[in-house]
Every structure is written in C-alpha cells, then in structure tokens.
Image 1 (spheres, protein in one colour):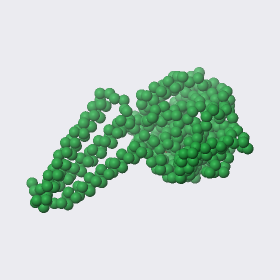
Image 2 (cartoon, protein in one colour):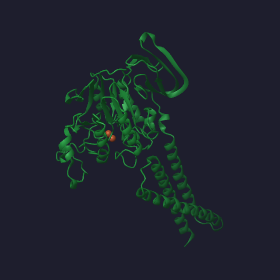
Image 3 (cartoon, rainbow, N blue to C red):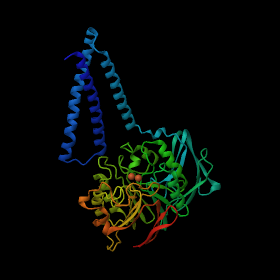
Image 4 (cartoon, rainbow, N blue to C red):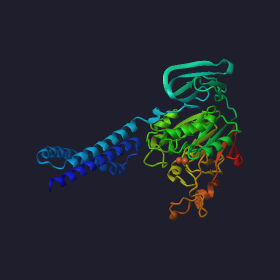
Length: 489
Ligand SMILES: [Fe+2]
Ligand SMILES: [Fe+2]
C-alpha cells in the first residue's frame, strides 16, 4: 500500500477514535449521573460495550499516534503527503476543543453568566412559617441591599457587601402568619409584600399552573397570569416547563422571569421540575441556580413543604435521564414513601411534571402510574397535579373509598397548547404513535373508569382549603369556569 493511502487510513482511524472516545465519555458521564438500578442484564448491556469502547479506541488511538509520528519522520525524508497530517491536526484540534468545551459546559453551568436585571421572586427552601427567600438578579455584580419589615414606614436595611449577580436573601426567624414588606434599594422603587405561613390550621388558597412555556408566545402565559389576578392565593404551584428552552438558554429564563415576577414577587413560587428545566444539562444546574429549593439530593430535584393543614410533595420525574418520565429511582421512591408516611397534615398534594394519567399528546405514563398509584393509594393522596401535556384534564381514582380517592389533574395549559394531535378531527385525545394493538387510550380501563373531563384550553387551577373542605376550580384564561369540585373529608 502506498504511503498516501496509509495516511488516509490512519487519518480516518484517528478521527473515528476521537469520536468513539467522545461517545464513550458521554455515555460514562450519563450512566454515572443516572445511577440506574443495576441488575446483571443492565450491567452486561451497559458495560460490555463500554469496555469495548474503552479498550478498542485506546489501542488504536495509541497506535495511530505512533504511526503518525513515524510517518512524520519518514515524511521529512521521503516528502509524503503533508496535507493529511495538517488536516488530521485540524480535525483533532476541532474534536478535542469541542470535547473540552462540552466538558466545561457540563461542569460549569452557564447561569453564572446570566446578564439581566430580573426579579424579585419568592420561594421557600425552609419552613414557610418562619422563613422566606427573596431572589433577584442584576446585570452587573452589586451588593445585596434589602429593606424589610412589618411596616412600610419602619423597614430595616440589610446589606451584604459582596458583589454578586444573583442575590439570594433568606429571611429567617419571621413571625408566622404575618404580613411583611420589602424593597430592594438600588434595584427598584417598588415596595412588595408577602405573608408567612400560619402557625395554626388556617384557611388558605393557592393557584396551580404548568407548562407556561414563556417565550413561545408570551401573550398566552400573560393571559393566564391576568386571569389569575382577581383570585387570592398564598403561593403558586408550578408543575414544570417554565419556558421553552430554559434549561441552558439564558434568554429563555429572562422571558420567563419577565412574566412571573408580577405574581412571584408577592407569592412564593414552588416548582416541580419539568423536562424543559433540564434542557441539555443532565444536572439541571441552571434550574437549581434560579430555584434553590431544599432538594433532598444533589442530583434529584425533589422536596416537600407544609402549609397550614396541607403537605406538598414536589417530585422530579426526570432524575433518571435514561427513561424520561418513566419512573422514580429507588432513592426518590424511598424518600417519597417515607415523606408521605411521616405526614401528619390532613391534605396531601403531589406535584410531578409527567402525568401518570392523561389522554393528551404524551398520554399515560404507565410505568409512572404503576409505580406511584399504589403509593398514592396507601397514603391517601388527595390531589396529584401534572402538566407536560398541554391541556386540562381531570381523573378521579378510588372514588368509592371512604377517604375520597385521588384526583389527578393535567394542568398543562399555562401558556402553550397542544395543537398537534388533539386538534385532529379524527381520534382527538389519542396519541398518534400509540400502539393500536393494545387499544386506544380513550377507551381503556383508566379512561373509562377514572376520566372526568378534558379540554384543550389555556387555564390555571385555584384551590381553597378551609379545614375539612377543599374547593377546586379549573379556570380558563378568559376567567370562565371549566369545572369545580367540592371535597369534604
Ligand atoms: Fe410542556
Ligand atoms: Fe414537559
């Protein structure tokens, strides 16, 4: 074989090896993050190819380097094709610099580069009775200066003399059930207020939205927000998908904040992570940067909180990146069981982005339903809130049980609607790629027995809790009522 041909072959080898190494690195990284439940089969399926991907490229990689070096020496004497060496150098340079860039992006999330003035918004990452976390972002690093107090005329100034772009003020030792005012000097002249959670069982309200997808069409999210305005609510539950590409797209976060600030500056915003908060970052670090809740795990974005006589569990259905929306990993399931078992509150709400039951575009998440429905049943969960499918739908399971059964709501009409399948005249409410051999979902057992109603409409939900009574409303963006439920227990 002439030397020119050899050069081509080694060059291609070199390129292939680099690509294989990148695939291998990504796979290892993904598997580590996913900490999937290992059994002999998954072990064999995952590690045998990985071993091949390590050993084979490593062998050829070293060999090709040696060959190239040798050729280079020969080349000086025999004037062999320099262009292949130059081309392989450039391609190698490109491949490796892209790998390094990917590595940097993986290990250093870009939210630190966030370049907008946004906020303030509220959330709880501790006891809602005695704490409140206020967050705002500044384009340039500034000191954090916050005035706050029970009376507008007598606010105390707190200053953190560290220059930051993300300002997280966690107020502690607050009085329960108390109205506080706050102002962020040097940022805005507006005086905002919030109320801490009550110490005793007290009537309260909250709203629930999902899939606001701010940025796809900002006016749609705005219309839902406007419809929420006449309603009183103590906090907001969001079942995920805040913006279209918020995971790693910083501009998307800005669009989202622009819309959420007007209600989240006075009402804590409690989010259950959606797929769009992950984006391409399997750690969802930007979401964590913007929403530092008290997560149970470093790599699992789930948490719970109490308000009056209700307990709220916020699940991360995408922790297992190999099976989005498929099921909860062992640790999260164990935590969920324990968290629900320890609960002493009368009302139980679970929020998770992917709906166990739905007849929308994504349809039922059967594995999720199989895993969670028995847990919800055992612990008598009252309401499960989801999104992901962009419509409104209500299911009611175990309705003959004395404790009242569980309501499952898909409340994904917060800003974007599923226009694709659900608008079809034929077979609406049916997934296009659903396997017809196991029956269409709109006629299956779950739909026949549990479904109450569904509608493709922009909407939000409002919950009024008063001791033993729960009043649920689903409200369209024009303010009209989709349906309401009165539950007593
Ligand atoms: Fe969505
Ligand atoms: Fe989603």
